[in-house]
Length: 116
Length: 118
Image (cartoon, rainbow over all chains, first blue to last red; front, side, top):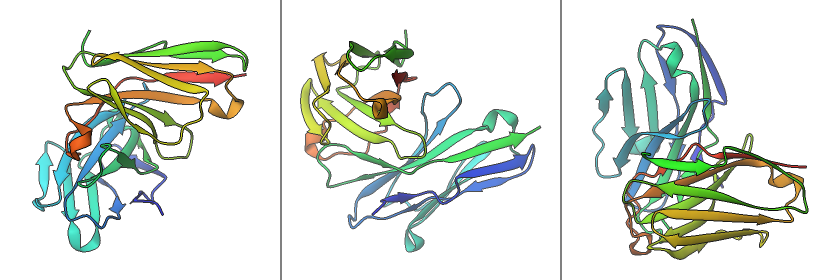
């Protein structure tokens, strides 16, 4: 079974609209870590945020914000006032506290297109 | 150079060729990784090295052979590949000792090598 599900394959928004990217994860560990990465057309995955399972505070960084809800096993990512430069594929990932190989479980990604 | 670099960026090879992908990290990390990224599929972890020792091999075919001569360099040697091996191969590094189970440090990725097997 997929440990990280990103149900939205592709999203298109018009510039300045807000957009939320969904991420649902599955784990039996009580200690785990969640991540978001951005992959622009150049190919390199860019780290955006890390969240551990004991910290449910939402986080805001500029136009980016993250909503972590353990009750629904979700770690959603919102971009406010989207810009063309936000066009990329966004990946959510899970790392479990008990794993010995530091394996990250990635979702299949959500391709975001911001239309000018 | 900063971050994680990979060469070549693009590679086209025949099924009988032998080639190598190179990764170098300039972050002082102690763990390095190879991932395969195919269209419409999640990133697949191939190999993990911690302190130059392989700690994970996710059932990767033997036609892929990794080498980690030191904590800054990682190679992926390729031979007798199949067309289905065509993909983006990503290298990453992190400040971790994976064998301790401390999986909380983010991984930093290189730009990838786009491999096409003909």
